[in-house]
Image (cartoon, rainbow, N blue to C red; front, side, top):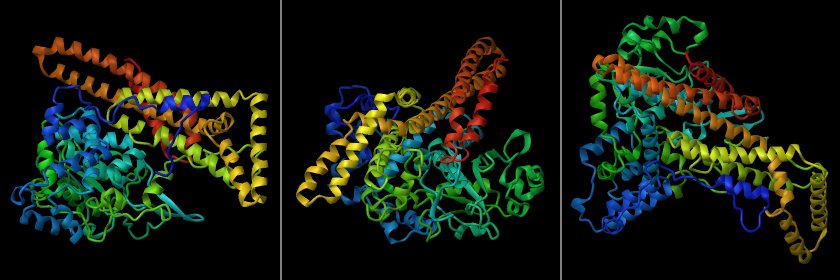
Length: 625
């Protein structure tokens, strides 16, 4: 990223509070290792050493170190004992995923490549989410519904567009799942791909539904006549294999397609009887973009990450299974065979057009820079998609406050003020592990502690801004006057004098300068307070969802087993009381966010509407009945 917060030396109260607010309160995974006496064994056993490291941290840097150490440990392994992709599997992958020579080299490598740490880190992120949902023992339909609804709450439907000129927007390609999750907003297609990635960790097969022509269409495909809309891509629905059925979900409408007996509709049913969907097809308020012809022509498309095909990651998954439990590999042929068994004759194939750089198979590799193991050419002089991804998460137009006393003709003051404001916002909300990431991983205590600290910090900055007295105003005038005078002298000074003047200018821009930091505090107070309040409300809402789901399951158990009914009913009643309390707390936090909703709307379209829906749900379920 372009900006990093660095506070050193003597710092004023504002900076000290910020430093405390940003201190991490936990590591990036709930699998934190406990002290053991296995240190010596870990040094001798590279697999135990890998497990110990991943239990401590799951970020890409740790994963890179772990895989490099495994490469070194097994560098002398005889060729015939190295993990090798079989010729039949390699040929299947090449044809199914349209792989080029470089991609075939990637999956044939017996040693871990520079892309693998990112694949491992992404899988661990998704594993934590899957665990936090706590549905491992439920039927597929319930697991899929829970994952789908969670994704719709966490990823606001707001496709990513970039400005390429006055009044001109360019759609950006779908990003890898964890990048969309950290951002918190994306397209319907990105929602589908996150559910597909979660399905791999949660033990169910996910597919994309579209016409036969989707096989060759780009990710940003747009049907004729819809050029003014954001491209939805080549697919109209999401499918989940449940036994011998393919259940259907619509990520744009945030619902399962209505089927029989309260279950989602199946692909076979809607193809055979599309008019069964008349309630969606003929009801204008639903504004469904799918037609009866689309339903009849729906076919099945599978996806797989490139790294998941490599044999080395199959071995890695097996070695980590008992202690880490993360899914890292995909047997393409086996998955296709399973889905074909539920397809009832409907064609099944993999989606990976040869020239589509951001197809699910290639998305991670295409997004990452060469230094990170990807193929994107990005540099300070030629910023690419990652740079745009970072800057488009900032509350643009809301992080800069220039004192009226500052001479507006100089560009450096604006740049310096903006850079410091951005660095503070980034340090608070965008530097992994972010508060949002902790919420998604189910690390609610860590996330809440950090967000409460941030909210307190930004709240004090806002109060200080409101209560600015004459002395503060005088200090700002003096600071701005000193800078104006120094910039005036600098512009006319000779080379020898400029060095001394530059030192004096830089001193006024140091974090140790209380006036400078107070000006920055005024700039970031409102954006920081709004964001921390929103994320706190979201954290409380997710906790309430978990508590409610637990109560509902206990209630169902109490009703289903008469012999155990008294004890089960007591447990269900207790869980329900806990859930109602959690909903009430979530509703309270959503009410605290409401005053900031309009402020955030220009930078986060649709967030206010989502907050309103979640508020209504919390208030409804938080009211004792």
